[in-house]
Amino acid sequence: MADGAPGNAQLVMLALKNRSRAAPGWHDAQRLEHTDTDGGPVQVQPVVAQIDATKLTREQRDALRAAILTIKQSDAAQD
Image 1 (cartoon, rainbow, N blue to C red):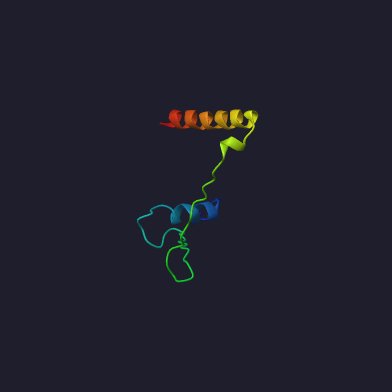
Image 2 (image 1 turned 90 degrees about the vertical axis):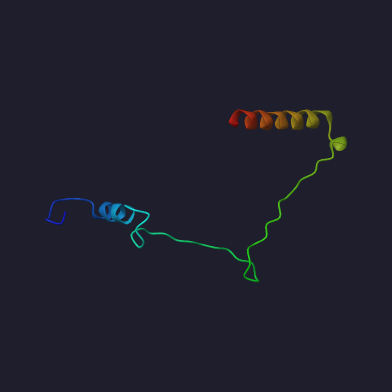
């Protein structure tokens, strides 16, 4: 391409930027950090749902049991 041969300049530029992650300045990188209003890390509270099984119908309990068993089988297959 430097001698006038056809080519894709954007592809060459991308290859050069990403040729070495160890070479500083050669690749496009962005780092984004979220902070709390005080400047500290954002605190995340997990949402925990509780289901009162005594208030479910038999069909709902069966559906819940089937869903839980499916998740357990999926988790066991991944291990």
